[in-house]
Image (cartoon, rainbow, N blue to C red):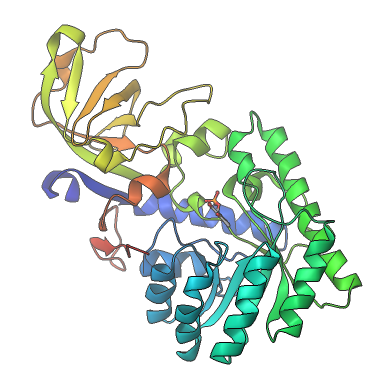
Length: 376
Ligand SMILES: Cc1ncc(COP(=O)(O)O)c(C=O)c1O
């Protein structure tokens, strides 16, 4: 069992919880009659990718060229690279397309479109694009009724590229205060792509793809009519930010960091462990939620949550475990050498600190160690 033997800190994935999370999102989207194009930036692993794709059309979403190359190398060739394309990456995209990858890119401005048209001419390639639209005012995207959306689509098509449709990501759902607000944001996300696609279709584009997705909006959407696919990622593992939003319970979180007690701050009633921010990440996504989980919620080695015991502070390789309310812990319960597990604030950020997972509750079909692709 990796819990006893893995060198700490180690990244653990609980297969039973992972499977339950995958099943519950697949059932939700089935009920809403929309397929999943899972965002694999969360898992960065082929075995987990294949689990998420069971019963789905097979298209995937990635956030780095390294993920695109890794998954294409494992035979997943319908890839949406869902970060606004940097013109400097177009040559690498063309090389990937030469190897048979069906790559779709995104952009949200005429300047990038101009560079794409130039590169399409110089490289003699037809790049396929989704135009990104802004549904939450948080990051990127055309405003749906901005005439620049249709003008940019025209520039792309006249320049030998394809406009496959539109996409948006309601990342603002992470800041919602209740599930009703998330449901409303899901409706805004849906209405935004439907309106943008309608504008393109009125101008003569087919624009078959209307792509949306974040885990909170996918979880609480009531109606996804007009949406052609949902990109969700963090639902695979879930995390404390999702638990704080009501998307899951802390018990559903499939990812944890295994750590060992290395000492005590007896005067303060605090415990030192060998998982600092290099293992847990610096993500403090629960800081503005009703329950601040510090750098993570502490569990026994077997995964039972120790209520109100959190990683209060971190240095690079040290974590300081404390009571949430500041009352001293009984440090005798945490002898040096005791193993603990820490549930992450943000699964993508914590997993990003590791090169592989150790699987707990694994079945015969799954190896004990799963790789993660890294880099960009
Ligand atoms: C463009 C895009 N699509 C989909 C997602 C998936 O969102 P989540 O991890 O909440 O499922 C993300 C996450 O950052 C994203 O950036």
